[in-house]
Length: 515
Ligand SMILES: Nc1nc2c(ncn2[C@@H]2O[C@H](COP(=O)(O)O[C@H]3[C@@H](O)[C@H](n4cnc5c(=O)[nH]c(N)nc54)O[C@@H]3COP(=O)(O)O)[C@@H](O)[C@H]2O)c(=O)[nH]1
Image 1 (cartoon, helix red, strand yellow):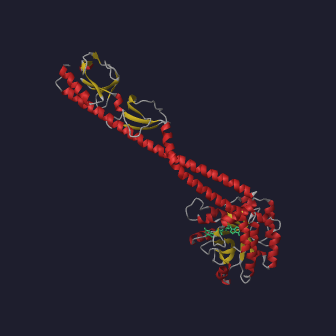
Image 2: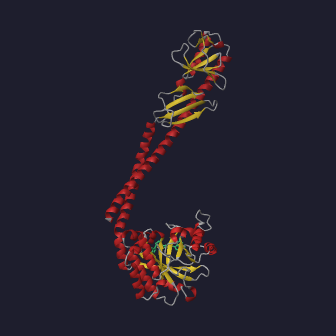
Image 3: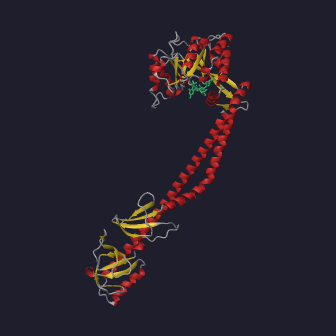
């Protein structure tokens, strides 16, 4: 059943991992494609603006020269002079001589007619006609302030041939009117990529280069193909890791049982002290697993696994037996040991009886074995609370471990058969740090005092934290400031009769009514 669950879990995670990797590669490719095309469009718009600026500047200079010349009589010499400029500059289609807006001649004609009203006047002065026809065969841009006017090929203004050929569309707009544009009609929304360039000499003159969505698609596909091999390798690696972890999970249950038989598990002890004088009152039993190959497996990993997969009762039994035999060797010291219990221990009908048998066998007073229960255990309901009451009646002190991280509320807590609260190390480490949770410890202490419970603070690493906790009224503490978890032999050396003090919380008197 478990194997099946793990198998499907692994398949699902592998698929998810591959989907995430593919989506990431697709996103990366899209960002790269967008960046490349935006740079391209910017470049094109700049080139078109240079071309446009040059066309107007050169036209202005030509017209200036013609206006300053004496030839203004539509004579052959005058018309020849006009044609010289037309041949010199590709974008000039014709030059008109039109004093007082009356066309007298162009380079090749002497048809007389009036200029239509101008469309716009540019900032620098000259007038503009957007689609001037006159007697010409194609509408063009007419530009000038008279008497000479240049007929410009509007297409030239936007006629850019970029190195990379794409379905490009360029528009030159003056005062919101399209002056010139290449083929194609861009959608003026976000679906087309676009980049604009404003003319330095005329802020109302803007050239915008557009690319249709299919160009983005094409570029994206190119980049995506580039990323695929790497994405594939990452997927294979991830699947490898998932398969490895799953295989490990398949076998971890058996390995725990095997580890117990091979003596790979040992119990370490972390002293708990009275904050007032630093004397050791208790030690927490913490399980360690060192494989025969020398590798160490973290309790966070194997305890969680054993809790979920049914080996935790075996581990707790091992810890209790070890602790009780070790305590029997410390009969000369007034010290107790606390043991972590899991929800499954409390759910076992034989647990209370087994513990009593062990204590009797090694002649250990139950008060020397304290039991740490996390808030999560209470979620198991009335049967767990009944077991805890029985354990407390038998003489064991009950501590709520990791307090503050679980489900207990003030109203819930005063019905529970417990003796001490153990503030979770995350709140202790937040003390004086300015972290958002730095007030939580003092609230917990206040709550405990109101309920007549004593408090143990775990995870004390600095003397500042110890001082703050003492000032709050916390009686007991545990953490690397005092000692890390150590093997039993080291604990024996660490403990001297003068360094211990009995651990007798105020509330170890009669049991409150449990619900
Ligand atoms: N049901 C059982 N659970 C057990 C048992 N043995 C361990 N555990 C649980 O595994 C979790 C991880 O334990 P561990 O890696 O041993 O870490 C403990 C301490 O080493 C650590 N600690 C102690 N002082 C400090 C400190 O100053 N700073 C710091 N960063 N860490 C410190 O804290 C862990 C003790 O946690 P707690 O039990 O909440 O008091 C852990 O949840 C264990 O409970 C077992 O036999 N049975």
